[in-house]
Image (cartoon, rainbow, N blue to C red; front, side, top):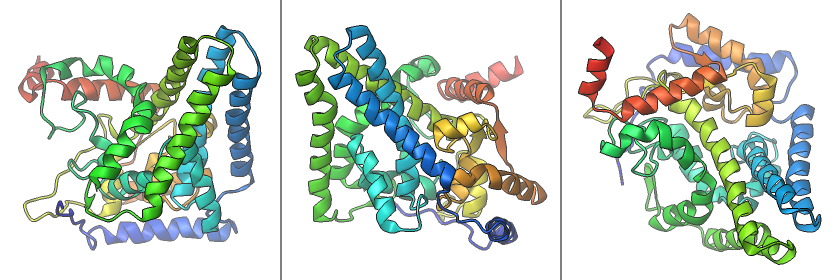
Length: 367
């Protein structure tokens, strides 16, 4: 098992204490719960209705092939919406103060074909603890033809990754549902966590929910939709392309941009900053105060707030964002935030830079 990087827990302690105090004071003064509010619940109902409704229209509506393709696309979009707006908060135990409610809502991940159990290990543990640390953050370890860490091997094909990356993003959920969960589950190695015995029930849940997902989104459409099986398969792939692209872009714009840093521990395994300050250096917001972006991304356009306070429901991120930004500024720490277009440009530039040798980048910089 890899040796865990050690953050400087006493370093930058004043910032951590001040930030936590101010955020806690906000909730106390306004007599607010840190969990879901009415707006969050209504948003969840909307996304669930769109998800289930578009599926029922697909399999029972008897529409033309063209309309069915549109419905497949809506299902893919709503699948991503449910994942980031409901399941993600629930798995972080941020949606409700009641564990059983969070556990129940986390099954939206499972029904969409992604193991909630494996997500906890890959995302909650490995990614949130060791954000942008090569070899420890599971979310920056994609397929080899994508290079998003300077420590990864450089191949000639990487020169074009800023172009083909967006096509690969369309395969995100397809890979997740059919490959990644199985591979990580049975390899039993996720970032810094390995060798831990899976509970026996998780073996059952893994195969049960995969079977349910394949049945709902593939087998039943093949049986119930009165069009060729080719059209249905293409629709299924379209669903994954839309959902996968959306989810991949949300993550990439948070951590794989020019502003975000990638750190490595020193020879003794120690990190330069405290865990909280490390999150500020490795995470970026986009469209920070856009209600539309918050509605669509489940608040993950405000990844800085999410990484610092993953136990707080995403509905509260717009309110605590000014507190985080001001406190970071007072202590001379970064707070990365940009518009959505600027974040997309930054992401493309980052991929382009990582696809070229360092020497060539230097030559272009000084040309």
